Amino acid sequence: MERRTLLRLVGLASVQLFSSRLLGQKPSKRRPVIEFEHSVRDVMLDQSGTFGQDHFVVGVLTCSDIQGAMKAVRRIREKSKFRCRLRYRSNNRWKTPYAKALIDYWLGSSSIQVRVRAIKQTSKKGEKPSVKELRYIGQLIALINTQPTLSNTSRLITQQRHSARRKDVEVHRTLKERIGKKDVQVFLIKENQSELIQFLGVVLGTVYGSYEGSETKDKIKRDLISYLQSKLDSKSLWVPRRDPRFSVDIVAEV
Image (cartoon, rainbow, N blue to C red):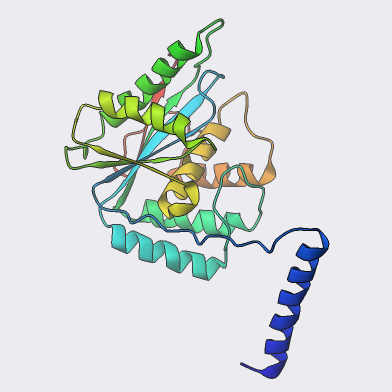
């Protein structure tokens, strides 16, 4: 390492340490993110929107070539130089080239399949939270149990959505009890542990944000919506679709 580079790194470290002490804070020690080790047996589940508040989208992703897909994702990351977590709701404009490249890979490959259940209306006035939760789980089950690759050896991978993990654990315990295949394992992971969960979230968010009458006004999100529509040669993402790579079921109301 050159002397100039070494001095610069030492200087940056000193500034960070001095700033932390000046503010009465201890230097941050971030734990490294442990990437979840996926398997071809995985059925990845995610959602977009809040169930009980108008429209809602839930979907699953499966991959028949995990190693090949992960190599491709890492290669695309390096090429795009995008280092952040990929999130649909993020306004980071640098995510767009990376997200588009992932969409190109997904639709140009036969190894990744995404199935979506898009519900136009989920709200009911005066509904008890416990009843709404049962309706919510019912929609997840309706999608999972129609997954062609679901078997007793499958693993259901879901994202931790609450800071209090126990809330997710309770929901997913009920989910596991109601899945048609009783031996299915359920794993609860954080979004930043899986590139594929992040990608699924972007696809579902793009479908959610394109709902007619409440389309997102965000320019970055609109760009992704237009791009996916053009790749699918479709004017709307809210239409029934039967394709091995991307299938969509539209539900009017639940």
